[in-house]
Length: 52
Image 1 (cartoon, rainbow, N blue to C red):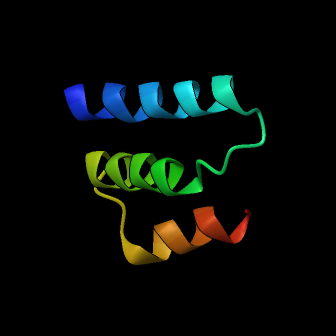
Image 2 (spheres, one colour; image 1 turned 120 degrees about the vertical axis):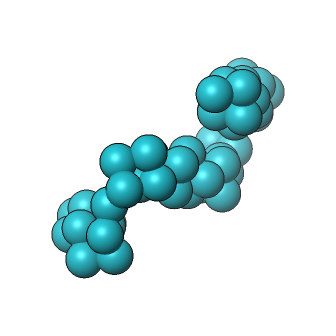
Image 3 (spheres, rainbow, N blue to C red; image 1 turned 90 degrees about the vertical axis):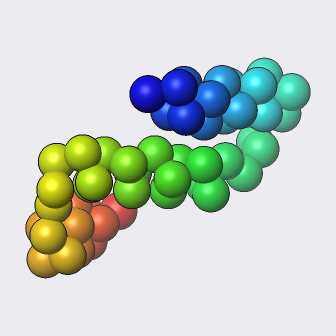
């Protein structure tokens, strides 16, 4: 759980400095943690990411 908070803190700090900062790498890391948490299959992940 600490890692997730750290990622969110990084995103918030970057956006505070520059609202257009590219935080997509950290956002993808959070997405992957959620996928693992819910034990999603590659097919389920594809459905979710297909909507992006």
